[in-house]
Amino acid sequence: MKNIDLKARLDNTIVEKDVENAYRNSFSDFFGDKAIIDSPYGCDGFFKLQDNQNKLFDIDDKTYSESNLKKLKILFEFKYNEKLEEKSKQAIIILQGIYYLKKFELDGKDGIDFPSILFIGDKDQCFSIHTNKLQKYLDYDLDWDIAPSLAGKSNPDTVLQIMNDVS
Image (cartoon, rainbow, N blue to C red; front, side, top):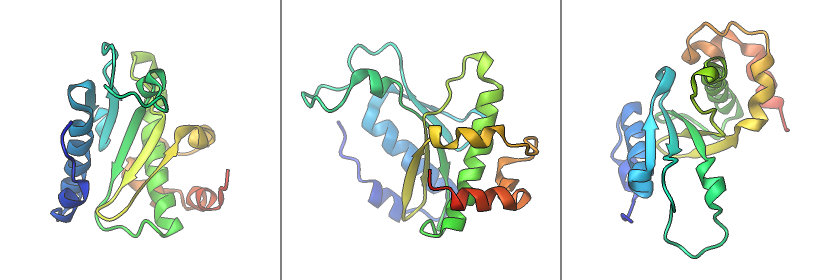
C-alpha cells in the first residue's frame, strides 16, 4: 500500500479541480485497482469498489467487514477554500449533493448504484454524512431540473431546513 500524504497534496492546491484531484488520487492510491471512481451526472466523483474482488485487504483487523466495505459507495463534492465550519456553507453544499443524489435516484433503473455516503472535501477540511440522513429531502417538491451548483441559491428555505436538521 502506498504512503498517502493527503495533506501534502492539498497544500499544493490552488483551485477546486486540484482539490478534487488530490482526494480522488488519494482514494485511488489507498484502494489501488479495487477502486472505481467516475463522474456520473457531472458530479465531482463517485467511488465504489469492484465487485469481483475476493478480498479487499490483507489485514487481520476484524473491525473491517468485507461485505460492508463492498457496500461503500461515496458521492464526492469538492470545494476550494470554503468555510466548512459554517453551518450555512455546509447546508448549501449538502443540498448540492442532494441534487446529485436525486439524479442517482431518478436514473437508478439503469443499474447505477445509489451512494451510501456524501463526502464533502475542501482544501483544509472535510466531512461526510450517510445518505440515509438525506433521503427525506429527495421527496421535497423542488425544481430538480436546475443545476446542482444553483440549488442553494434557488432553495433558501431548504438550506435553512438542512441547517436546522439535527437528525
